[in-house]
Image (tube, rainbow, N blue to C red; front, side, top):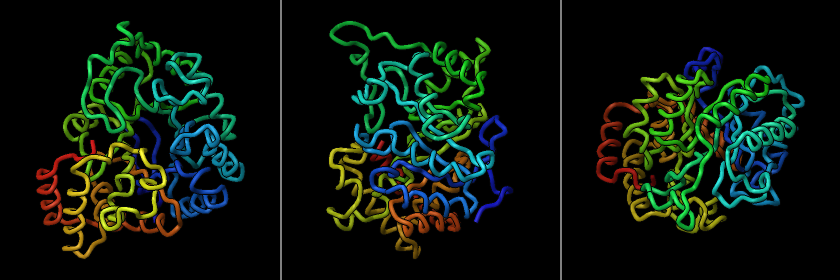
Length: 355
């Protein structure tokens, strides 16, 4: 499917990744190690060289499954040519009630960053991480379905919360880069202000520059187009798009059958980003548009994300081989201008129902 000439450069680095990245957040919960190996081997055989992990995976995060995904990746890597693969993982940040990770990460300070990296290296049986993300920001910022900034959340019991500064975070990351444990650093679930602060401080203090962003992007969440895409262009940053199918909503299965099998119903209350009043209306509109052009909603939704100028690689996940093959085959779909115009019309009609 892919060969090296199809790979894309990640921002200002020498990293080159396949246009599709295999997501792994179901490995160790919805998928067994055997099933995970089957997906990983198939993706690799199809020319995918980029694999996305996180220390808190699988999701939803639970103490009994925590770190299982990295352990599975580590077992898989034992028999692979590590130098041919791009392995990304993410450090869990504070304030998410996951006290089973490093005792409940209170901050992204040097101790937590070092511990997270060292543990990930050990679990994944590797000497280095190609791309290390801060999974979410260490500061008060709307994320994971929150949609507005609240100044009152700067305080806890009337006392202003003291966050680890961006300069201190970058200084800690510089040391692990110098130690050879990490090649490049990146941000996830970040906003324009945060991205520019990381860049500004890195330049002023001669600290490592971030090279890419990983945020949600789909037909029902195009928030990044309102400010972040200009930064990607002007600062030469990569972009990895996660949740291109909107947690399964953009397959159409929940619109057609509200109790359809999938994560939305398996883990009620999780992924609140999609539990909003406009989501089903937007999905219905896109479903009907795809049908008009003899496409499945999955094909149209993925085809839209795959071809955006700012997307370096699209992270796809699956719980079955059939899903994985369908998602990968959608890369062959080349949406023409007539359907793209209608997609934009529907976007303006119901803009970002799942921010």
